[in-house]
Length: 371
Image 1 (cartoon, rainbow, N blue to C red):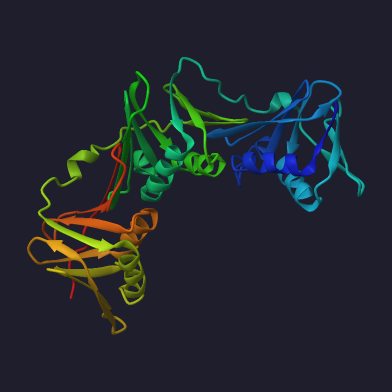
Image 2 (image 1 turned 45 degrees about the vertical axis):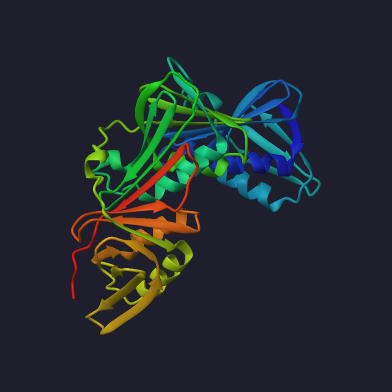
């Protein structure tokens, strides 16, 4: 089997698939790319058994065939070759590969394609279609709020709830929570499942700037298909917590503040916060927001004052600065709204404005006030 392709085209394709290759796999073939030639189409696959990425590219080929090629040496070789036509020749009997460029020849040993794990196929699935832009926004706005605690398996992923024409994405680690929903979706599907964070992070970087993404799913896997690419991920088999129960509904104190001013002030003040709690204290009154922090162990403290719009009674409340900074970083409106009730109840952060068919809510638990 022999095929020719631009080195740059092949590099772009394996860069996409490379994210699915595990870094410390105990099964050697999981470090490989699976190359399958059918006609003049090369299909490239990679998997860590949890997430699989497949992409296709046109080549000039002499016959059909398949080979598993070690990922790192191929990736490093292509990165080191300037853009030019290359020829890849495979001896399937010996599982050997020879790459020819204008600079010379590079020989490496591959593995039998039949030993490569089978990529799950859509079987007994339901499906919806989303714009790539909306899906990208959902991933960016939620994945940062997932938990890293494997004992809370459900919280390590993003909950996706499809309710006919409305889709909701939720992520929480019990300290912060993000709920992002949008409507106007065409479909007759009513289901929910939990998507792994790693798969969504890979998907985020692979998504195009425009176009549609077809999402299919069954009880075990979710399948994302767009352009020449597809990503398959194993769903997290766990019960997601009742997130609506922790969202306070009565928040009479409402502050509106410029997002960038709030964000930059928090970044400066957080430098002086206790490194264990990252606690900053917000003192909010009519037209004024005072942000302060102190670290008694080192006698460090800082205070800044911002202007804001405020309706409600004066409030003094403590938060983990890191959490609010993360939230403000993924918001993209000029102003943000913070809704509060009492110092021991969660605060709600909202964008200053949003499209009519989208709704984004971020919740952050308070840190007990310490002076």
